[in-house]
Image (spheres, rainbow, N blue to C red):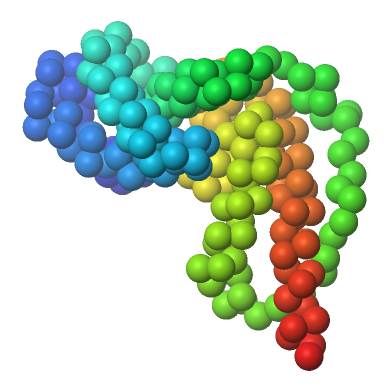
Length: 200
């Protein structure tokens, strides 16, 4: 829970305090929009998810019991809204089904790794590098991408990610590991091409 979230009053929100609701929108609009955009790849779809998330939150705040943090609750609404749009495009998509590969015993060995030790830190901070990461994330299956986004991009804990997605913590940890390894594999191609440039 971040400092701004701690300053929000659940009681005021549940009373229908418009100023407090506006503050909540200010605090969470950026992270929720970013998550939806990276899940869906469309600014218009991300805007729709953001709007629908706050509409649903407004409608359901009185039933919010505080078993999870407000941010986790909002992320869960946003993920569900994004999933509804995804299912229109890909009816087979489901993030909450337990998959055989969610077991901690499953071996996942990436095909290719590049040693990035010789690249300077600023190489990882360039706009081009961030675009390469975004492009690689879009190539992840939705089941892995959303776990990576919540845990590594938005900074939710394993428990919060588990609650937001309705998954077991074991499934979250396993999918996160697979997402990180798959991303490293995908980015190895990108950075592998830059090593000869640096050496040359």
